[in-house]
Image (cartoon, rainbow, N blue to C red; front, side):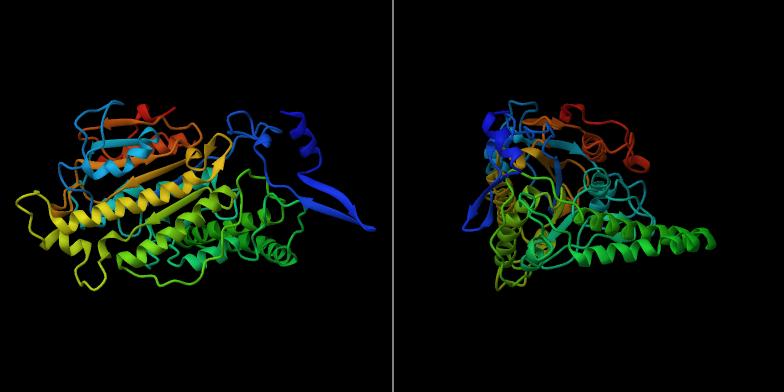
Length: 445
């Protein structure tokens, strides 16, 4: 640690002086000298910059023969529908060949695949496990204001993030509302010199604490089914308690935290124009939210099935079923347009994470973004040869730059691997034929 950094840290990241007869305090930005030589930890404490995790769920898969590389390992080239990701190739992994297993259950098209991808199983009624992002949030998301943040590009509150089979984490469809939620009056700048707890937060915390004895008494008096429902409900209450407790503490300084510009209300909906505007705004907000330590887990739902071009009644989903294959190109032209457009939206999102520098790295470098889909080929609803991608290194948790073929294996192997990479204490994940205890060791650093 340099002498300059030592002096600045001793001064609590502020400059103090006098103006007339009064004291003046001027806050300092967080400087590179507060980080270690490679930008991965705080120089003063050695604490690593926190790892983050996110999902990008994009329905309807890809065209056959246009995404799968012709070789495995590190010396592969992205096929035509993945060329737009070439700039991230050294920080990307492509996993091919996996399956969603049905175990004799009927296929609920465009739903069953998501259920297996996110929870490792096909639910039995309302009974299922939490989604993998929730499992990871239980480890890395308990000391942030928001345990996770969910957004949708299609103006809906749909998401594929679950606390359990009956408790979905709804998406925020409005960028303006997300801005207010994160960076509104309750936002505390982690690099601010002074911190004063909000009296309203203190009152809320006291109210929740006051009912603790009654809560325990109620749980002891009801039957098993009601006890399970109450425990699910109180898990949400405990999350609020943890968030209130955090808001009573001064945040840890973070090197790249800056306030984004305020976001005005925009039209949200299912046209690609509306979704693109939302994605541009959401991308910046999520990048700043991660940089400012407001959350470490996020989920993006693209709403691919319902997306359409302005003035058209045909959705991407309907095109997959109704559009003939072009004899010259061998693909459905409109479907292919939507695939390319949605890939560009992910590039824009990744660019936003990569634009916030932290020493020698970026927010993307300490994040893992998992891309999954519902079908390998939407036109025929295939459940095998699935494309799965990861982007970012998770702060050194993931090895990158590989095409890994897992022919015929359950897709849940990838989910298990990422959960273990983020120290979720599990050795198996999934149910029936989708259950696995086998990680993708090539991914683990």
